[in-house]
Image (cartoon, rainbow, N blue to C red; front, side, top):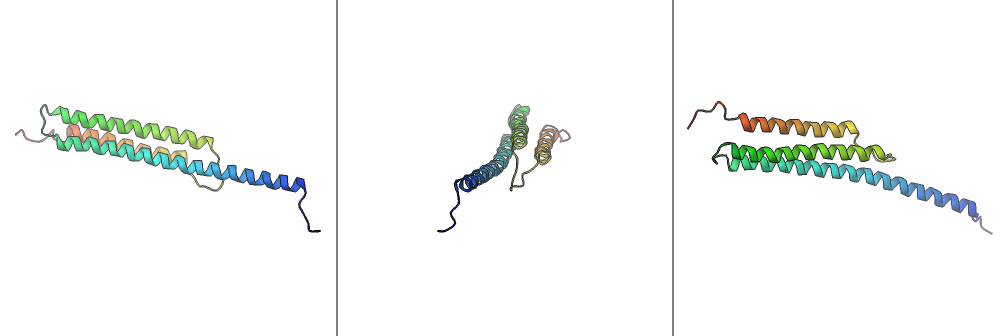
Length: 137
């Protein structure tokens, strides 16, 4: 008669398979978290682009502060998106344990978000003070 595994061996093998599936699911969740973070960064950059587009398209509107204010609102929304996305992605990342995947760490998430926030703040400043030295029409 062939060597057939006994019930204890089968139970141990099934347990190993279940643990592997759980580990893989956690790794997939880590990667999904990073894709979600990247999606929110793209959404924030789109809001920045819309703000800059409003400023460029409606730059000649009167009063002159109106297109700047519209652009600023969109960029502030983008800053809020960057901040919230970083906080949420870091919170999810802290709760999960990686097995095979190599996730972005919290510092990387913060650096990406901080860079986009600083650049967005710089854009707001440039929008408001870009034509300060321009001669009157």
